[in-house]
Length: 418
Ligand code: MLC
Image (tube, rainbow, N blue to C red; front, side):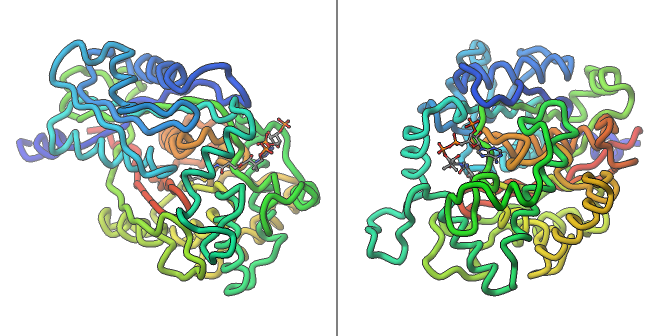
C-alpha cells in the first residue's frame, strides 16, 4: 500500500479545462481572454486561485508582453502570496503541449500541487496588414532578399508550409485534391461541435475554388484566424486526494492522467531544399510512444495539429495512423468513406480532431493545441456527446510551432479509480 501511495503522489492529472468562446472577433485583449479561461477552469475544477502554485502561459501576437505569464499572474492577483512558480514558454504553436509536459515535471519534480496553463490571443480582431506584418516578421528568414533561395514572400507562414507541401507532393505523389480533403474532413467535424467557428461543412469543390494564398494552399486550407482563450489545470494526485476535489467534482473518474510525451525541434525557417530531417513531428511522436511504452494501436483519440493540410498529413504519418508517404492516401480513404456515409464519419471511424482543428474550429495563434487537449479530455471523460469515441481510454495530443520548428506530443489516459 505504501508504494502505491508513493506512485500516486507523483502522478500529474488534468483536473479541469476552461475556455472563452472562440470568435472571429471578440473585442477583448489576450489578457482578458486568458483571465476568462482561467476563471472558467478554476470553476470547473472546483479550485480557488490560492490553490494554484504554478502558472504557465504562452505568448500572444496581438498584444505582445514582456514576461507574459507574470503579467497575467499579477493581473489576477496570484503573485500576492509567495511560493508560486510562473513561466512563459515559447515553442510557437506547440506551446500548450510543451506546457502540459512542463506542468507534469513541476508536479512530479518541483513539488507543485496545482499548475494552471493559460493561452489567449486576439489575432482575429487584428486588421489584416498588422496581422500579416507581425506574423511575417516572426517567420521570415532574416537577411534573405528576393534573390535568395531562403526568401519567403508574404504571407510568409503559408508560403513556408507551401514549400513543405511541394516537397511532399514531389516526393510522395500527393495530389492537390488530397490536400483539400483535409479541410473538408475538419469542417465536417467542426459542424458537430457547438462551439466551433465553422458551422457548416465545406465541399471539396468549395475548398479547391477558394482564392489561392500560396502555391497549393487555398484560403480554406489556412489555420482559421480567431480570438480565444483556453486553460487547463494540472494537479498532483496527492493534492487531489487531500482535497477530495477531483473525484467529487468530476463524478468519480473524470481525471485525466498525463502519461508522458516527447519533444523535438527543426529549423526555425524552412530550408530552401526540404529534407526529411526537418519534420520534427515524427521524432516527437516516437519519443512520446517510447517514453510511455505505448504504440499507435493503443490510442483511441488523436488531437493532431492541422494549421495547413501538409501539417495534418505529416502528423497522420508521425503518429502511426499511416505509413510514411501514406498520409494523403489515408486522408483520401477517410474522405471517400465520409462521402459514402452522406457527409460525416462516425467518431469510431475518424477518431481525430472531432472538434474540427485549426482549419475549422478556430485558431487564435498559439492557443489551438489547447483545444486539442480540451477535446482529448472530453473524449477521455466520455462527455463528447455526439462526437464521442466510444469508451476512449487513451489520447494523443500534438502541437506544432513555426514550420515544423517545434513539435510536442503528449499521451493522456482516463484515470483508473483506485
Ligand atoms: C480564413 N477564412 C476562413 C478560413 N481562413 N474561413 C473558413 N475557414 C478557414 N480556414 C475567412 C476569414 O474568416 C475571412 O472571412 C476571410 O476568409 C478572409 O480571411 P482574412 O484572414 O480576414 O484575410 P486576409 O487578412 O486577407 O488574410 C488571409 C490569410 C490569413 C490567409 C493570409 O488569414 C492567414 O495568414 N492565415 C493563416 C494564419 C496562420 O498562419 N496561423 C498560424 C499557423 S502556423 P470574412 O467573413 O471575415 O471575410 C502555426 C504554428 C505556430 O499554427 O507556431 O503558430
